[in-house]
Length: 463
Image 1 (cartoon, rainbow, N blue to C red):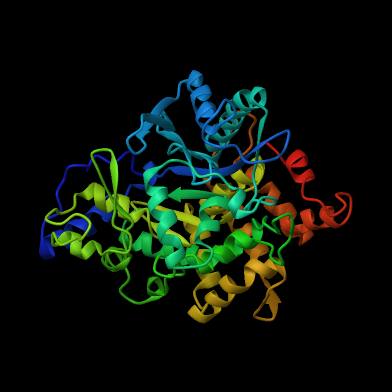
Image 2: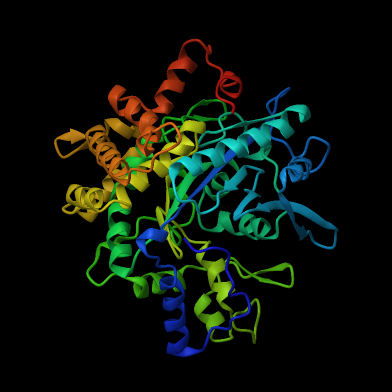
């Protein structure tokens, strides 16, 4: 996938020329097969080990202090000026990777574009080791799950980032669960490259149709406010009541003629959040990027956008699969270290091998849009047990993992121990063999050894 954007000051032309410019910008991410990379992102909840509460931004045990502590490992601090106050450390960068903060301080590693799953798994392991070395003396721990299992929305802190203040005000106007999405969810995602427009279309369709299967495989958010919530992936359910203008399945992806142009039109109709200028966020929530193109944006009248504004805007759409200059898989709950590696393994195996992509397409090509919606709507609650075409989602999941394993074996990327990348599918193979999701296993513990408390999850499943 493409590296850091170099388009900050490139103006977007008016009219049809500008729209063509936006299409060309998306299409500029195509890469030859030999240059395809894997970029893995994961989020995790911080907690204080003495009282399990999430750490605030400020203070000796705060998130900013943690970020500053990580600088000793060669991370460069990224600062943002908060209001009229001093600049604060809100992110880190190193060798094409970044460490950043979600709204309630969920710590995110956005990994560098790497050539193999062996590399991306080493990257995640190195990051977690560095975080532990800084966090433990501070009395902090970190947990990978899809939803904060114990603390209420009002118990969650807010990080002082300008865009989050805008989203915090806007979210309740368009959905009931947007603030929960911001403060109480964590995910693991993978970004994958495409060779050309036709390759993008095929991969987009396969990954969108199979995203509910990934949600089932990674379902790990069965608790809300310390109690079972009736879901296996409550994180996935939350996206159904966050903001209908920028979330969900994109039916038009399955229509004839879909390509970069159609996705640009979709993004143009996604309401804006902000314009970023001179180190500050201008609140444009709910306003139209089309008006911005015409210099008629109410929040910033008389100004027109740059390609950097377009790149920023593209990050404010949250469909199940997102197209930037690459494809981003967004359906999975966060989890333990081995599932951070398993998520990119699943999608790399499916999409980076021609035979596997053909097999995956054969699996989904006759799925109707209505069936895909039924999968998307039913999986958060039922996961593997959701009925589908005379079988269940478990049957789909078994076949999907099998296809991915074949793809990884044919990629034949071997580590120093002689193992190929299929080793990273091990956790998923075990799950589909047992037919039990991570969420169901935690529920068994909750109703059994944990005695109706979620507190042990912070001890038994912390990194």
